[in-house]
Image 1 (tube, helix red, strand yellow):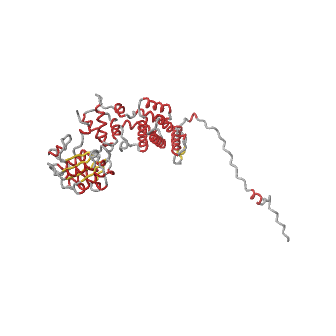
Image 2: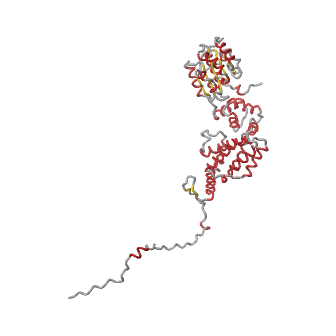
Image 3: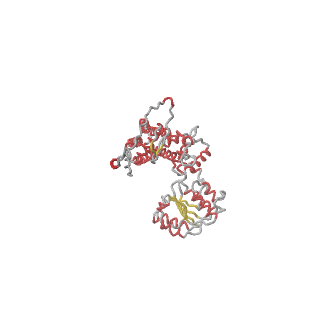
Length: 450
């Protein structure tokens, strides 16, 4: 019986931990400088490497050549703590979910003062430390604050705020983060290469999305896909059917129908989703993810090169054409409607009806008088004007001149238009009455007398 994939490929050194360089680099430098603290707190989401890093730190501390950032891998401590090793008697890993009471803390405190058997340090790793009760933390407080020289504590938790402040203040806190999608995708591709199983490129984005940034969850999903692979390997159709995601061709059909305002195609697609046994909520979430990609592509045409979209190149070309068939306001409005509808679908007794209403709202911007709907209608009119050759004002208010299609001169006859005669403006009435009448001839001078 083979081990799970995430156990077979669990890192043994800090260099093998992916996506946590902000934690592993300072820890390695502290080991080089021999400035290791007596207590550490590793926090972060599940499956991102907290417990694994605690084991690696214990391995680095108890290596015969250590403390060192790179364990030798051949001494007794390194082999005991290696992947698949029997474990070390001087490194005690405790599940605080079931050993978090005050009695368990007192027992741990009594064991802490005994010297290690054959290692440099005795190290306690408390996993799920937020499950320790307040009384249990208070029982540990003194030994955590002033431990013996041979004692180290490493707390690992997903909820650091539940660890009491007096314990947190005596530890060095290192927050772990979710692994970026690009890093996780490359790691999964490397693991599949080691397993010598063919996996289609379009499968990795689905696995990364299902894992939600958690290495362990992503490895579990990939392990399930690899277990069901046949001679063709892991195909996209197999992954979408097993993980429950919507097929990309169905999303293409719905998005193209939105752009063409083809209600018959949209509602037929919704019927296929429901009749096929798929969850309408999952379809709405996948549709929202597609609209998000289209919004990004409309704003950043080279989004694939910049790492803003995780999809194969051929899929990006299809989505780029879809983004061009919408206006920016139309895409933004459609994404807002689907996002709001997805929130309303949670706990809804009629998810199909809710999904159909979402699609109807997307295709009817004229039924709403808000600013976003008006802008979406204006985008549609501008695109129609560009096709028909009519000049319309742009969204910002400036005139947008559209070149009309050329028409052969022989087919156009200009009608003869007679230019109107230009008339001089009439003089004001007051001026006409006040001006003196001109005389016909000058008056004759009187004759001169001798």
